Image (cartoon, rainbow, N blue to C red; front, top):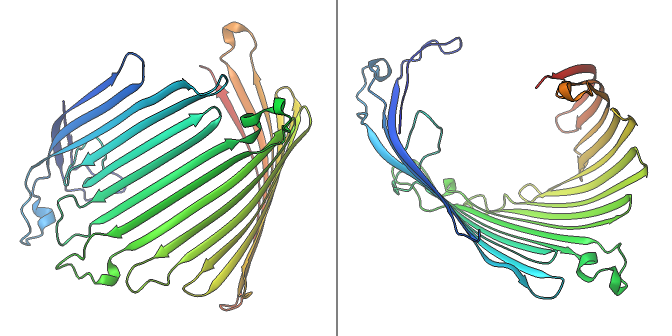
Length: 391
């Protein structure tokens, strides 16, 4: 049970706070599971009565809609059940399959002074996750609505999202005992589709059909990772699209392609090196523009002593459009040395500290041949810090 109020007390940056709010409500929560731990339930319900009294200083003598106390509900359900649990397929591989349902609903005009909750929303999500040995797969579907009272003068937005992911570790599927190389990669695939659109054209709102949103997006990622000893390598391919179906904006679409490489090496026990490269192409179909971006990053971590680490990071971005109208180039360099210290005795082991020194260097040049600007930005800084822990 809860009762709360917000008083109109001025502070240093709000000198005319004239509104007052009060609310009181009741809530309940239940958590349950079965004896085998396959079924899990977490659910809650709350009802709040909110009052925002009429304030003559806010009315300013105008005739406005009367303010009334409102009582509204909020609820959630988080349910999951393991359909298959360690079900043997072969001697070495077991299958698992679980289903989950998540429900959240907050009524229109729900308000409580104790917590912030976005009102007028209904969210239902369904999940199905499974595995066979080291092979994993998952599916999720989400349905989100607002304007739950279907007020005809307010835009009602519906969002539908579906996602799928798959993980295939090829080396562990067959195993080296079958003559397969440990260099066989771990493959991953992710697919995400989202469609957000208006349910109807609001009446008496000044809206036209071109104001009602309707947009669909698709995001796909394929990745492969190799690891053997102190050497690792990875590749990522991403393709995303944004399809604008809104009346009058049908051509405002985007397409993006990204290729990325990552490389890691540990030549010494205390030295770790990493290198990343990505190439991105973004197409704006509405204005027939193609932008390209290349990113290169190098990083290293060297453990100079048992308690000190030297970290270096260098990155460079080069971007521009195919018509050579604009271009941007940036180089970032960071170097940091950190040292941990403390008392080794058991009685004072919790007393620890860390000291660091960091040097940063930034360079950025931006050019635009239409608006005729050529900006050069340089920045350098040296910072240090000391952290002490006593508990």
